[in-house]
Length: 396
Image 1 (cartoon, helix red, strand yellow):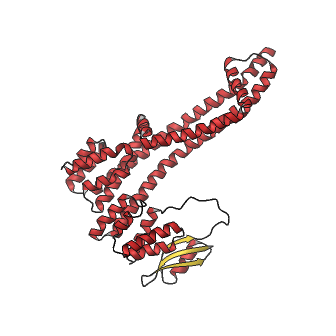
Image 2: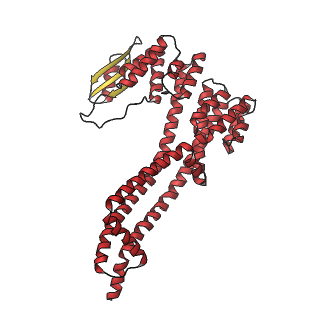
Image 3: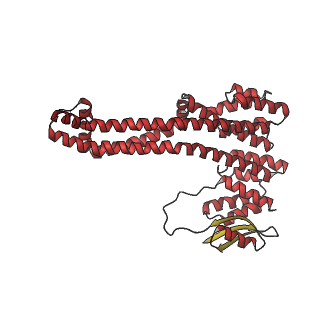
């Protein structure tokens, strides 16, 4: 296989080495044997036929991690971005990185260049970079942002993974029900119609559906597709307006899950910005992008209260952004001057609460979904076979 290796020579100059090796570890050993420090190894193998791909997007977390490695190797920030641009396979991203390096070469700061990149980079990264430019700790700021982003991605992955099995169960169940109603029931309706026997009311209703579906299958298929499309559009609209969040908050177990997830993102983001040296009120204002729309006004109100001299714990409690042990931890952090550390601890506590809530919900949902699907599918089968049982009883 062919690999592209990004490495730093003993003199500190970046190099991009293309090499053929059995695996990535072997490619890394070869380049390291040449006296260079390996930063990244990636395969250049591609299938000759590929499906059309969406336009590539810069992976912000990876970008920050690679910048940290290059800065710690002794490169300047402009040289590091040039090195990343040289090995970037996507032309649009390469052009954007080149534009950032060119702006910095003309005298712009790193944060200014990121801010001019058409919204590609999150505001928290820009704020951290701007603060670090005053203190001279850009590598540390980028490392903290990368850790925050990695933690946030892992948290989202945990939530998604817990929903995979229920979603799969619902999907398979829906396909089975669709098969029964769209294929099996129409077959039974034709048989019973030819037999000319009286049927129970529920069986007649279901078999009437089967006859209709058999005669108008194109309309049924089109209606089903339209229903799915409208449902997806409705969910997206509810997400944008916050209606879905409000509806889910009405369910106690789901409300606990959502609150823990939202609190974790807020506390982690605020801790990261404070560690970057950003004043508390400004840091809290930047955290607006880390919370859903339903909480943005509460966060802004808390930031305004901070500027008026109030304590963080009081403003968060008044805005419904904190409770229980997390509140006590942040109050302790205010007294001891270790606020960012206590925010991280509060986030860790909420992560434990999230894990417990997810486990409880998963254990509850699985048997409930199985029972629901069993009732629906079993009910359809029983209604199809009721006339057969009736005929058997008549024969006896």
